[in-house]
Structures are given as structure tokens and as C-alpha cells.
Amino acid sequence: MKECVFEFGKQPLKQWIRENRDCERMKLVGNVKSNLMDDEYYFPVKGDEGCRQLYHELGNDNPFDLLYGFDKLAKDFHPKEFDLSEMRLLDIEDEDGNDDMPWGWGSDLLEDNPSMFLRMLCNRIYGTEFVVKDGFILTKDGRTVVHCFNPKGVVNIPQGVERIGRIAFSNIEKGKLEVVLPEGVVSIGMSAFDNCEALKRVNLPESLRELGISAFENTELKEVSIPDAIEEIPDRCFSFTYIEKLKLPRNLKAVRTEAFVGLSPKKIFFPEGLETLEWGCFDSHEQIIMYMPKTVKEIAEDFYYDSYVEDHPSDHRPYIYMDPANPYFESKRGRLYRKGGRKPYI
Image (cartoon, rainbow, N blue to C red):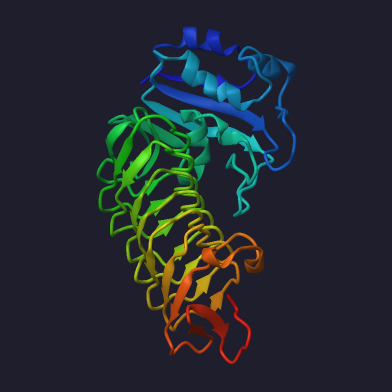
């Protein structure tokens, strides 16, 4: 298998592609520096001036355009394997303190459909070597989907896959997409389907154990059935996904900030064992009937709206049925009170 190395800043991209069209294994080396967490619009690149000139070929100072450029310019350039082990993105930290993930709250990174190379870089935590198989880019062990070459119609995720990687299907806006996940998938990564407006349907298999932040934010899902093994719905997981039919998992313990912004089912049945509802987690303009179990210990006053309750008319309030055995709250005519309290809590 012929391996070809591309080093950032050493050679113009177009020239390198012309010289390496028979490449079967591509190795990217070098450093890209970016400050996604601040207000800078032009991201400096570590390296010599030649590296910056490379980006100017694509008409922009943004170093990530180099990654987009591979997809746009190399239409007939199809390596079977990729190695990003020596490629680094500097000065970037995700919420876990890792510095290899080009992502940050408020960044403009996903305004365009991310390139396959950017998707690989986002998933370096699962390995730095990738393979092309059955229309997907996967980690070399075959366990993580990183990129789909033809995301439209019905997309069947291969057997043996355990994870849908970070931003793997993000920003797919056109067409109609249904994703079929096999049993064995245990994790859907951060922003895996973020802003995937083409997504109309997805099944969540019973093997699923983890959902990432913003995993399905701003999609077109109308029905969602979350497997029972899920214990926490993370921040913005289904935010701005206008769900009409929702089934929550039996083992659910917590629903985090803005997890379900915009949903509109007529009723929500919370499972026994639920303990926490955070700020704006069920933000809705609809008056939803909610059935609360006795296990609930913490409810944000504005869990159903992203501002203080007194700012909004009563027709936006949920109608709450609280289990009378709850030691913290009680319900009177659909209004929630702290036990022994005289003023409505919600």
C-alpha cells in the first residue's frame, strides 16, 4: 500500500494532489493553531509564511479551509486509509481538557458542512488511524463512524459499529435522511447530528448507553424513543428539535440544561427514579401536561422556559401532576409548591 505524506505549509495543496493521485494511505503531519473560544475571526497558523500562502490559495485565511479544500479539490483522490497521528490542532480544549478537539461553545466552525478531515480530527480520541469501508470513514478498529460519503435516503450503519463519532452527521441540511443504528451502538457523540436538518428519522437501539451534548440539536425528528439504559439527557441534546411524541427512559435520573427546547407533546410521563430537571430543559411554548414521580428532588423554577416564570403568561406553564408521596414538592390544581410553602414554586 502506497503511503503519501502531506505536511502543512511545505507544498501547495493542488500540486501535492497532482503528484499523489495513486496514494492509498494518506498521512497528515503538522500543526494547525486556532482560537475557537474567543472573538477572533482569523485564526493564526503555527508554521512559516508558506503555510499561510497555502490557505490563501483557497481564498480565505481560515486554516480549516485547507481541510475543506481536500474535499473540494480532490474529487478523484480516494485514499483507503488515513493517518492523522502527527497532525495537531493547538490551543483548543474541549470540556474534558483535551486539546485535540476543534470545538467550542459559540464557535462558527459548523457554519459549513465539515470536511471529512475535520471530522477525523474531532474523533482522534478514538484513534488516529482511519479506513474507508462501505461508504463510511471509520476508525481503524471499525468501532466508530466518523464520516458518511452519501448521507441521504436510508443510511444503514454497519454492524460492529459501537459509536457515532463527534460531528459525524452534523450540518447536513438538504434532502431527507433516515439513519438506522444496529444493536451494539453504545454511544452517540457530541454534536453527532447537530444541525442535521435533513434527519427525519433515527432509531435509538436498546444497547445505547450514552448521548453527547447537542447530539440531536436542531434536527427534524418528530418522534423520539430513548432506550431505558440512558440515565442522563445532556445539555442541548434535543434542543430546537420539535418533538411531538417522546418516550423517556425508565432509568432516567437527570435532564440537563436546554435538553428539549421546543418540544410539543401533549403529555410527558417522567419515570420513577427521576431526580433532577435543570434550567430550560423542557422549554416549550406549549402547555404540556407533566406527570412527576415522588423521586424528584430538584426542579429549576424555569425548567420549562428559558427565562424567569414571572416573565411569561400562565398559558405557557406546564400543568403538573406530582406524586403526593414526594417529600419536596406538592401539586395544587396543576401548580407546583414546595412542601409547606404558601406561594407557588412554579
